[in-house]
Image (tube, rainbow, N blue to C red; front, side):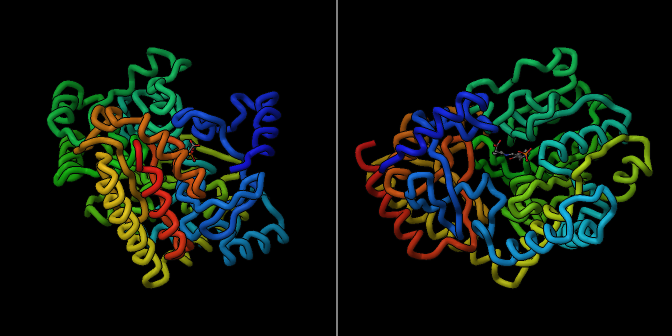
Amino acid sequence: MKRDRSKELWSLANTVLVGGVNSPVRAFKGVGGDPFFVASGKGAHIVDADGNELIDYVLSWGPLVLGHAYPSVVEAVTKAMERGSSFGIPTEAEILLAQKIAKLIPSIEKVRLVSSGTEATMSAIRLARGYTGRDIVVKIEGCYHGHADGLLVKAGSGLTTLGVPTSPGVPANYAACTLTMPYNDLEAARAIFAARGAEIACVIIEPVAGNMGVVLPEPGYLQGLREITKQHGALLIFDEVMTGFRVALGGAQARYGIKPDLTVLGKVIGGGLPVGACGGPATIMDHLSPVGPVYQAGTLSGNPLATAAGLATLEALEKPGVFESIEKRLVDLCAELGAAAKEAGVPVYQTQVGSMACMFFHDGPVTNYAEATASNTGHYAKFFWGMLNRGVYLAPSQFEAMFMSSAHEPSDLAKTVEAARASLKGL
Ligand code: KE4
């Protein structure tokens, strides 16, 4: 596949952008080689700078659940732009998006909109500390919650891909306020709380882990965390930046029937524009400024363009049958990919829930970070390039998720399976 223009852009990018990118996962370090540059996207397809058309299963790392340039989203953002892109003054659109979020996610009574998932998790942590008067945050090894200082401890996504799960630059005394425990391990949770329960402000977790590949909660795990946190007066924060509107229309909390104290959202609620959100009961949320003392702010928080894109996306997604049809497409595709791996004699362990999935090059099971990181990343890299050279774009790391959209057609899925059969051979 010709990539001359991408190569030109890549060398140019490296003269002025650190590592040639504005987010590390885009640099293809997890699969080797150089990234391509994208020129446009429509539906399930993207076109790179050399005119190669690719079926996209990354979808901007999750936001584009309707595919690229979805007509009603384009129309909503265009109209909003014509009315002015930002005011720093309350607008009706912010109310409408917050109402939609609160309607779809019952544990959310009040919302604070921000401009990224990182901002949302950072705000939620500060709120939990302010609300409880406690300092310690507990996170899960391999979960990723954006790049706020205290959360870059044993984190997933790009940190795992790049082999630096705990980032330099975070003061040791601050990192000491973050404790970590393995996913799916209630004994570890009980031990941490037995030792330090009175100091713990919150547990923050991706209810379905999506940043060490996709790892599902074992039966009873989330309920156990809910009970332990309640028993010790700590808040349970569900980071649903990725799982929100992907694991279920009401998020993982709806699928697994768990009511967190705070929920963090992003990605899908911006429809491809910068939106994050923190939400929960008013009794907690009203501790945020200007009602309460916990300060939180943002120039572009809730801006008209992003709220227009997010609202149009959720309105299209909540239409009867849309979410289910996306999930069905992914279930069918995963079955075919598993069959292709079996046919090729390649050991894989597959996970899928809602419209997100993962194929670990691993005998299985994969239930936590230690198991996920034992995957054969060499096999993954070969598979990635085999698929890309056959017109299918998967996440450039074993430790990310595969996403489906409502725009993927049966012909896309058939082409994907054919490419997989060829790419799995000889691994
Ligand atoms: P952002 O700050 O990137 O909008 O959101 C951070 C974040 C928070 N929580 C979860 C569960 C997330 O998955 C993310 C961001 N996800 C990564 C990909 N796994 C974004 C891609 C990137 O870093 O470029």
